[in-house]
Length: 204
Length: 204
DNA sequence: TTTATATATGGACAGTGTCAATATCATTGG
DNA sequence: CCAATGATATTGACACTGTCCATATATAAA
Image 1 (spheres, chains in turn cyan, red, green, blue):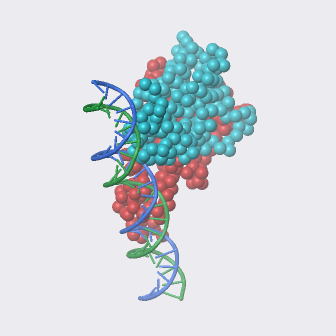
Image 2 (cartoon, protein in one colour):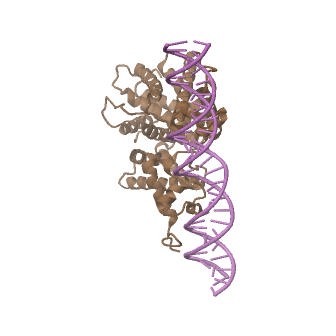
Image 3 (cartoon, rainbow over the protein chains, first blue to last red):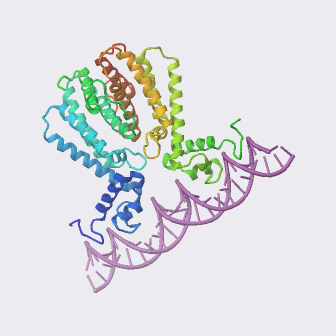
């Protein structure tokens, strides 16, 4: 039942994903093709079909591993953080900011609707895990008040994602903060604090 | 000097862009290729090279026309709106919301960093036009106060873009607003009003 | 060991982007 | 008006891609 060193190659699926990730980082998702990945993994051009029936399946599989990486990064950050819901939310946001800045190609792939299947369970489960975590923390803040959790969560996630995405595109180049002088991500986090404040969430 | 019905085809560049847009709407940007567009326009597969040297150039050219469409939509909306900066900003946001909902493939193409060249002047000019408009209106609100315009503008645009983009991906399906019962875009706009309020921008 | 299943190979096909050589049209100069 | 020039379109070619097929081989089960 050991997964390594079985069959012809060993664990080809893992090898394919490793190769795909390397190509993604260097050439973007355009370069991540069935044949190119197979070539890098040292197998024939038709070998991957046994593990990924499609190019779409390959990229979806890759995206799933990327989401797991983010989740791991979030968990690591949460270890050294207090139980304050606001601080825990901030950890999630910072994890995404960091991931997008360090691995723009990986982050961009995650939200490519054409080459990644967001309908599949494995993808949905992972998205929901993060979303539900945020909602749960927001609930801790809004307890008893007449505030819709989803609205706050969607607003938060939208701003978080939009900032990362537009920064990757290059939209925000040469637009430094001339007043506070702090990093833009910090400014955006502070901006969200003001939202929470206005919503009566004093603890943040 | 008339542009129509000149040379072999007439105005092939326009015909190519029309064909490209039709394919984009029906098949997404993956289907928008040099050969497919040429086929639809009724010319040989190598004809487009005279007007777009690349597939990237073709998609960039297409994106430019899309941005012009959005700008036109914004201008139209602004006609029936008062001089209140907050209302004018809201018009811009609503124009983008509407465009993203009605033409998801077009909106998604706009921010595809790999197939659209955001460095070129024609693209930058159009992006800056909208951005500067928003900044200008924000300035009218923040006049004299110690608030960084770019921070507010980036936050606004991030939230606006992120919401549209994630909605296209399907991230927000089945997450209705259970409290207010209003549309999510309205809720997000209201959310931004709270930001402005908190920033001391009473007029919004 | 035999059988069955999972996995990998090589060949083929249609499709793609891009380039080079050629042909045709439109405009300009004489 | 005619010739020349530059812009535009066509055809053919090349390497590459995703996907399918028949085949071969390795593992697991009987």
